[in-house]
Length: 402
Image (cartoon, rainbow, N blue to C red; front, side):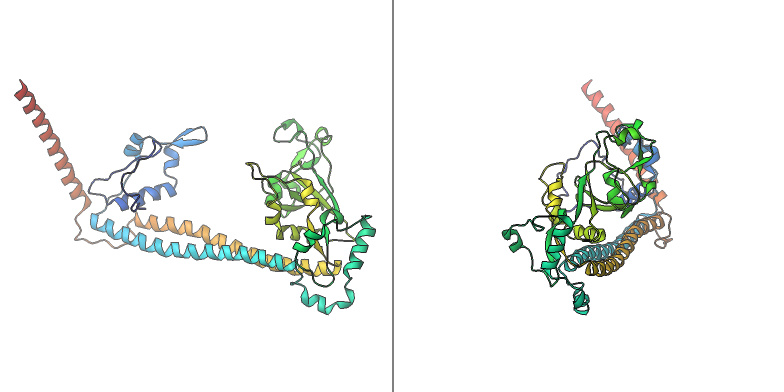
């Protein structure tokens, strides 16, 4: 609430800000907390003049329409001290929650990383040695299924930079594991309302970010005319964003269309589980984002995904990995949601503290405190006396000049 040196003196501010100086009847911190409480309670919202993309309240209206509760000065100081004590405890709790939030994020990425290094299913491999393919058998199967001349298509220099794989794994490219293609759309629904109303759902990039599985209710509908510029992708397609929020993923829960800012992946199911690919993309999202040029509108191209090097294991181990990883991530996500809810509650708690402060419930009243009304009367009298003295001085000055 209080600016500290070196920022406490010599300040200038724009005309979008209003300076408030309280008279001696109001402790500045008390007044500031009260104005902040009114903001949290959305009191100013109904007193603002609304402009394009913003709202404002004039200094004059602010001064004449905003109510200020004025208890005795001694009580104001007790209230401020109690608020700061409670807020300090609350801030410590928020800091702990945010630390836990950051640790969960790090743990999530570590789990994903370990999963695709074979560490999560190490015991499964030991127990299922008889089910494992050799890397040579795995590569031969990719060749046969995808008719690829070289299923790796990765130079020896690149392979040397990659971590060694456990038994039964081999590196290959994402392009060898299914069909990849960009969505197509010359006209997008948000720019052409006449394209709504048809039988084909059309998703946007934001919907991929918002949902693990996109359901029809989330999507706009796309007309037959629009379909001339779009491919209809089958239910179960893995959607991967390549613009704005790069490498967000979600599965289509219906046959639908999407724009060219989304890539669709349909897995060769004899080689790879689509869920395995999705989880792998989540594990290397930072690496994928690094391919985006440093421009205002970050994006990657289809080739980046096609050349993504994937550590591949047998379908049986993929199923074991997906099951274990999804169980762990589910627990992590539940904890993340719990932390998010606790952080939301801290805002409500902060408002509750201020509400009690300005309804006389936060600290006890002392009958020995000088009533604020007495102080206000004294301030008013002193002000009126000063005005009269100034008026008298002006008259005397005029007579002297005459």
